[in-house]
Every structure is written in structure tokens, then in C-alpha cells.
Length: 307
Image 1: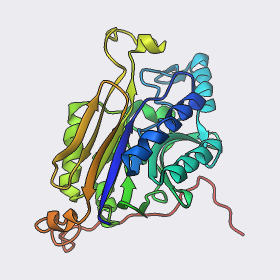
Image 2: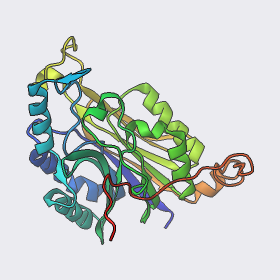
Image 3: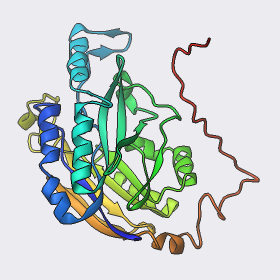
């Protein structure tokens, strides 16, 4: 069936940590069932948290002991993949019948990754995508993904793929995902700005695909017990802005701002053929005689053992 319901679950990581945040996610089970959603996209770093405003005690050329303690706390709140949290999320996917795409902070050895996980109602955890390029000072705390985690998978709503927050603005990454046949583009984020809405509409229009973007929503730093210098007392830390966009760049639902909620829209993947009639970015509108993109999908471990 080309018609289906897709959803963005706009919630935020809770100050109490991953356990209470996971409980918050699971509390939406009935709402997901009642919505009929076959795909639910959740924000970036939802399990593990996005430490907006945290400096981790770092100045150029040196790091303070309190920054190491802050990182240790952040590391403890990250999740293992697979682990108890992914088992709970696989159960949610199975009970609701919905594919899930969500952002987590993943522990791997002593390194953290900003990761998007894919869950299938029958198969459970089926894939992951590690953010290729952490933005700005995110590079202090997150490692970089490689080309081995760029999945586009089949689902009830069509072929789904994900890019996390600002890597959505990497043109070559987008081209690679388009070439993999993405039909529903999932964009976990914490970017609340109006320009993000512009980017989501551009990606939908450029890729002639549906876009589901889920943003975190967070109260003011004061309400959360977080100290950020000169932050207005009445301004949310993250104001949301989840949005669902059609393949011609038209907004189907949202943006949702100012609080949590489940944003839904009906999509019809039969529309994609019509949308790509005059613009297929990796098909008839490409110029492979002039431009060529090579994507290295090999895993790149820091140490490789051979016998």
C-alpha cells in the first residue's frame, strides 16, 4: 500500500537520565497505536541527551579536571547498542507495528557516537547510522562515523534513511542517500531555527522524497537546573519544530513548537514518480559524464589485525 501514516515524536531528554527518558518514550505507545503510524521518527540524542551549553571544561590547549568529570557523567548516561534500551525500543516497535528511527548517544569502547537507530516491528534493531561529522564543539565528545553506517532500508512506508542534524547540509551525503533510493528521509535533530525548516523543505524538494524531522523540546535552562550564562529566563533550551514535508517541498504537518507531541501526516509514495517527472537528482537530471561521486562504505577501525 503506497499510502501510510508517518509521525515525528517531539519529546526531550529528561534531566533524570536515560531510564526516565526511555519511560517517557514508552508512554507514547497508545498514542502511536491510535495514530496508525507505520513510521515514528524521534529526535537526535534523545537517549543519552544533547548537552547544550556544556563546555566540558575545555579551553584551547588544556582541559580541566571538572570537564573530565562532566564527560564521565555523560558517558555513563549513553547506551550500549545492542543493550537493554534497544531491547525495550524493539518491543515498542513490535507492539505498535511501527518502524522507529531515533537518535541516541552510543557507547563503543571509550568513544561516544551520535547515532540514529532503526527498528523494525518483526526484526527489532536492524541498522544504525553514526553521524559522520559532529558539528563545532560536538567534536570534543563524539567520534566520527564512517561509510559503513549509511543504511537505507525497506519498511512499510517505503525505503527509509536518516541523516542527523547538520549532516543534512552535506551535499555529498545527500547525494549518496538519494542514490540508495531513499523515499522517506528521516532527520533527527536539535536544531530549532527557522533555517532548519528551510533545509527540510529543500531536501524534500531536491530529493523528491518525503521528509520527517523530529526535534527535541526542552524547558528553560533554569527549569532544567542547567546553568548557561546570559540565557533569558523565559526562553526554552530547545523549542522544538518537528515537521513533515512532501516531495515538492510542501509542509504536510507542523512545525510543532513549544511542547511535546506526536505530529502525524498521511503520505503516498505513488506521488514520488510524479514529483520526479521533471527532476530526478540521481537519474535523468544527473550528469555522470561531468560529475561522479565515489562513496567508501568500508568500516575504518583504528586498528586492523591480519593473520
